[in-house]
Image (cartoon, rainbow, N blue to C red):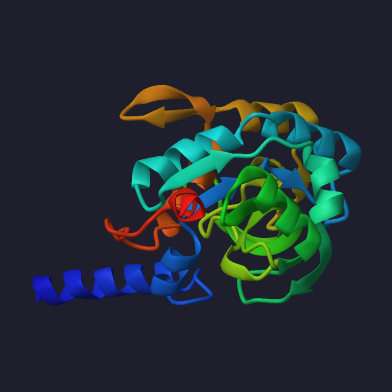
Amino acid sequence: MLRSLIMLILLVSLTACQSFFKVPKEEYREEVKTLGVLPLMVDEQSTIEHPEPQQVLALLQRHNTGRHPYLVELLREKKSYFDVRAISADPQQLYGRLIRNRSVRKNPEGPRYHYMISPETAAELCRQNAVDALLLVVLNGTNRVERRWDRTRLTYLESPYNGIQASALVVLPSGEPLWEYFGLVSEPFLSLQYPNFDEAHYNKTDQVPVHFVTIAGLERALTEPGTNWFQKTKLPHPYQELFQEMAGYLKPGMLNPFAKSPQENQQQ
């Protein structure tokens, strides 16, 4: 019985990981030996309903700065690529050049942003940085139905909440996506709203009001220290959670030890 349960958990886990790849993992490994990681971008036209949307955007852009090298290090630790390289660029200028179009698709857990990539820009970035493919991460605002519990864990409110999610793609120089990711399953990257159970309690009502987190509160959330074996890390908690999950899913399997890197192929 225990063995069957373990096998079921492993099967579910493997299925979840494989669902992110849009091609067989063998094909992915052949195509992507050197991966370039772009700076985190923000979709300024996404659904951010906060009363101070420009301050939310500025906050995200400021805290995104310098984060992607940490994702590079996590991916290198997985040893699934010959090399993983951090690419330097202005994030918002890059968004304007790289993102050709986007669509919003409805799913049971909430809407998802799908980004279409400019093949000209993707090819230019791959050529300039000598990489086989690009990993891009875009933070966007969405409304998603979630179940939020009070501090006693006895009461919850299921309702649409506005928050910041992450979409990510690995694309070839042609702009063709090989892998796609739609953010943390358990919670948003950054919650913009919260249910005020205390207000409902003291007003003796079952109607729980939903409020927006203040800019100061969002700042504190984005700087909350991450942890590693009960020790604080340099990477704030939201970014640590996001990067660890992405790195866990971006594992196409073991490299072929006899395969040659793109640089070796160019020398022949």
